Every structure is written in structure tokens, then in C-alpha cells.
Image 1: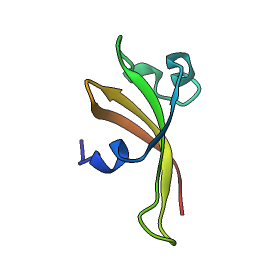
Image 2: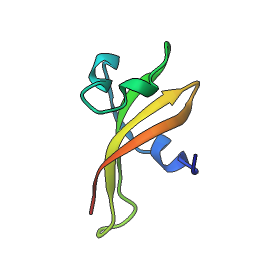
Image 3: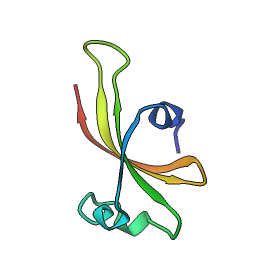
Image 4: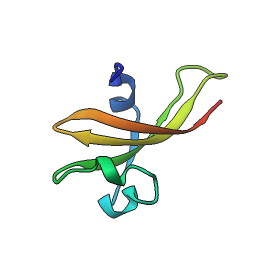
Length: 68
């Protein structure tokens, strides 16, 4: 996967693992994973928000919901 360090720095809210199904990440979830919402906004005109699966402190998958 790409370098997702920016997502780790942008985590905003942890969600219940059961919500992964709603966010199309269910097939990638493993025991012990965490589901987090993130919002990355490095500048006024550029931003990204979505959900990420965190495993052992690293982003293993992410789904982008919006880019502005």
C-alpha cells in the first residue's frame, strides 16, 4: 500500500468494528483491527475524509469518502 502516515496523523473517531460492513471494509477486517474515521486537511482547498483499518498501529486499508 501507499504511504498512509498522513492518515495515522488525521484519525478523528474510532468506530465499532461492526460498522465496517456499512463502510465496505468488512472483508478486510481481522481480529484485533480497529476501524477509524479520518479527516486530512493539509490546506484550505485540499482535504480528504474516509475510514481506515488500523492493524498493529499501521493503516492496512482505507476507503476515501470525499475529497475537496
